[in-house]
Each structure stands twice: as structure tokens, then as C-alpha cells.
Image (cartoon, rainbow, N blue to C red; front, side, top):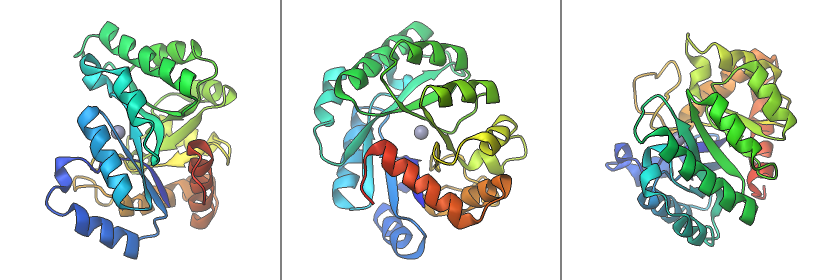
Length: 251
Ligand SMILES: [Zn+2]
């Protein structure tokens, strides 16, 4: 399994981060983890972890929650690090109205411009902002990437797939109220989906409520296999291939 979206800089791992990595890479079916930056601090921490563990890669960027601090020159300089494979997570979050929408949009556009200039794929955070995220990415037709923990409609997924984007599924597909994600999980082509944990958040059933980690992605992969009517190993293999292709990571 390849966990395409994790937050191992999170305080939730401060007590046992090293032991957890050791256990996951020896006991779980994990071949790789992409740990994501949300700010300058977490982007630097993601790089530190990636430099320490061969199976860990890093994404760097400013999450919409940190849109006020966005500094594109910092992101651009961090892209020079060899284990950095993407810009993210970036996007819009209208669930909370802070920072204001125009501030979030400005930070989002600035980082998409950097992706356009450098050719790196992006990791999109889109919460309750589907229309604006879609119209803004259309301003950057050469930029590609993945919508993490996808929550949009089937119609929006069709548009994104046509534009060449990838769609990523998290533990949300195991929740009773998943709705859209389940329909999209059935229709997305074999070569365009990723799997992720978004850990420590979005812990799949039957561990919902507990701290998440990449090993628990097993339950997400299992649910996708059930929805798509294929063996577990097929989802495991396809999602890993797709992540490696999108992020340019050799197998
Ligand atoms: Zn995330």
C-alpha cells in the first residue's frame, strides 16, 4: 500500500513517532508514505522525516488555514530537496471562514502559479468549496495533481478526470454517511485513483475515533475492493502505481 496523504509532523505522534514508523514498515503492507506540509514548519518537518526514512516522501506548501502566511519563495526553495515530490496541500476551505475567502484564493493561485512554473504535481484540499476550486484550477490548464479525500460529486469527478486529474480516497469511504465518495469510487478509472489516510484524522471503521496511521489504510483499500468488485491486491497495486506515476517515484 502507498499512503498518499499523511501528517506525521502532527503532535499526535510526538510520543511514539519513531517506534510507529519502525513497526509500520516491518509489520504492515506499506511500500511508501507521502507526508504533507501545511505550513513552513510542517513542510520542513515533512522533509526531515523523508530524509530519515527511505519509504517516506514529502509535499510542501501552505494549507488554506495558513493562507495568511503563504510565502511562495519558501515553497520554491523547499522544492529543491530531493525527497520533495509535490506542492501541497493547497486549496480552499469554506467550512471555516477564517482566513477570509479572498485571502485563501490568493494563496491558492500563487501556489498553482509555482506549480505551473516548476512542473510539480499539486495536492488539493477542497472543503465545501467545489465550485471555486474547479474554476481556479481551470485557470492553470497545465497543472495536474490529486484531489485529496475527495468529497465532490460524480459530475465534478467526470470533469476532473477529463482534465487529467487524480482522485484520492480516505477512510471516509468506510463511514456510513460517505455518500458521494462511494459513487465516485465505483466510477473512477483504474489508472486515476489514489488511497490515503489523512492521518491522524479520518480513521476508518472499525477504528473510527482512535488515532489514525498508515497501517489502518488496509480498511480503506478493503472497502474500495468491495465497491469495485476486485481483489484487495488489485486496489493495492493500482493505487500504488498511480501514486508513483503522479509523483514520479520509482518502484
Ligand atoms: Zn491533509
